[in-house]
Length: 120
Image (cartoon, rainbow, N blue to C red):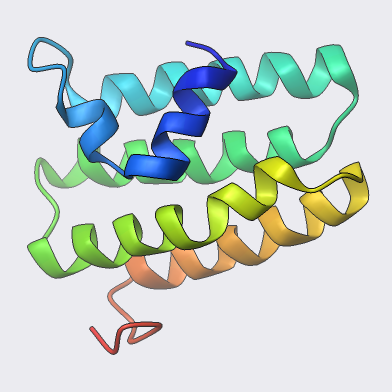
């Protein structure tokens, strides 16, 4: 996994991972989370530690449930495409971490099935 794959997730959403049929979604999310953790440590940029956390939360949800409702998938996909680009492009690490923390909260809310951005 790499920064380019994380940027593809930000631009295309979960379809960037699902377009690789031989890779299970949760495994790809775990791999991307592991890369994010590595980059957090290597660069000292905390936003990638937070990205690691929410990607792991997503992967765990898929793995534990076997499937996630279409409404939750749509909500998470919307959040990733709407908010992850700003997290990745923030000039300052502190701002990127703040934005990542907000995205993490929204993703956790969506996984719990609570209404959010799109009212789902």
